[in-house]
Length: 69
Image (cartoon, rainbow, N blue to C red):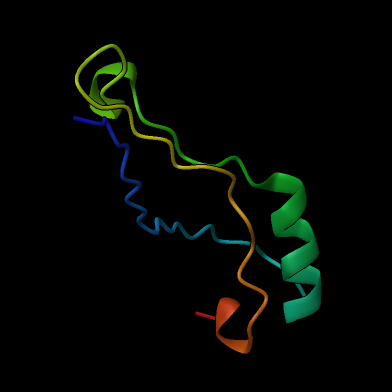
């Protein structure tokens, strides 16, 4: 019998609050200041049955990706 690995993916998102004069400036400042959230080793499953990898964080560049409060 063969052994197979099956990949599952999920999307994670986070929001940061930026003071800026325009949406464009907010995006630029957000890229400069952003530090993505992380999971502790236990929560990620490190060393256990399964490991969780969130991958790289990328800014949502759509029109809905920036808004004012």
